[in-house]
Image (cartoon, rainbow, N blue to C red; front, top):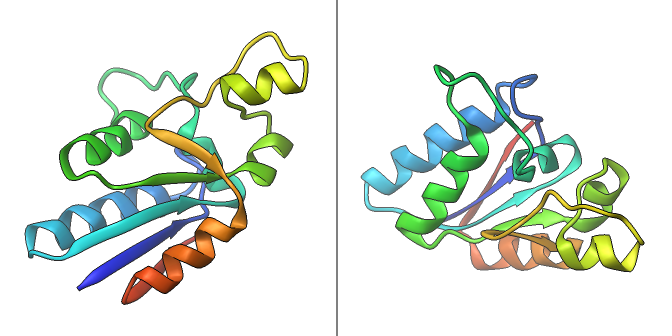
Length: 129
């Protein structure tokens, strides 16, 4: 079965991202596929390369990146929600005249159309908020 995940909770202030990550690993271990993950609302903070949790805690950004590397799971970040919250890619930083950026591959800034495509491609879209 094909699953899509919608993550709307911020890392370290909501259990949603960690629950979504554990759910993804459970699905994959049972032979299912993850069509993609869409980060929306405060969930966009999962894509920030500036997170620096203590060494004894899970680095959620790196854990999502590892999921992408091991299983080719697409990691889309809502561009409108990200820009509102100060997250941007290198190209968006240049476009808006900012000196730095904090969203880099494997995360990709995309529009809400990607969420609709994810919903259409997946058999199930599970929301973690």
